[in-house]
Image (cartoon, rainbow, N blue to C red; front, side):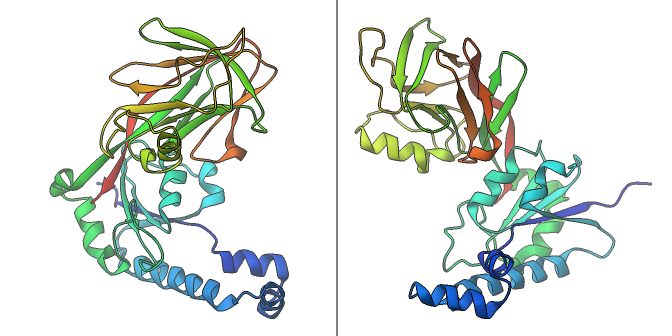
Length: 299
């Protein structure tokens, strides 16, 4: 007998819920806001939109399906199954938080507040959830999947980190990072900088794009479905021992960027989540490359 599909509904605590947890009551939270001449009603409105979307999606899950509910903080402890249909209700950033825990599952992004959220990775309304869930398990789903590239960082001791937008390698407190950079074509350079960014096509519209604009780069950034990666060295510093010639480029195919640590401690983290970082020390190497996994986003 075949197992019923499982819908895994993923969300994060709203700002309003976090305020209540910190201040105890709505009245105290409102008083805190008033001291800064802010209005709590805007935060409440976003909370209510999120709750309404969650309720609508929950009601849309067929009665004969299994279901799971995961808050963002619990993602690292949740075991996803290959047949899961993952429904993410929230902002675009929540999709990036989830992506590294997935391996080919269909992802449905639900935008609870289109008036405030861009909806690049959460393009659907909650009212469409029932139709989308059925589509996700139908043969037609293949034609509606947008495969988004991810980036992996693999350390020589076996540690691995993945990201949907970008990986950052640098000093944990954003001081000068010292390392040796090596490319697949044999070029290499000792550098001192504010760290490196290696971004996917999804991440090319965010932090990576800021670096690209700031230096007036002529590099053609990867598109949202491209398997290529763009990399930038932030504020490379020239000295008798360090160079500034290898500061940007593209990784195509199976090309890798190798970074060997030449200081006491560097870190590598993905999608801006500094709390989930890999520590690197003298002599260790991390190789950054396009991941074999893709985020399968239902369009």
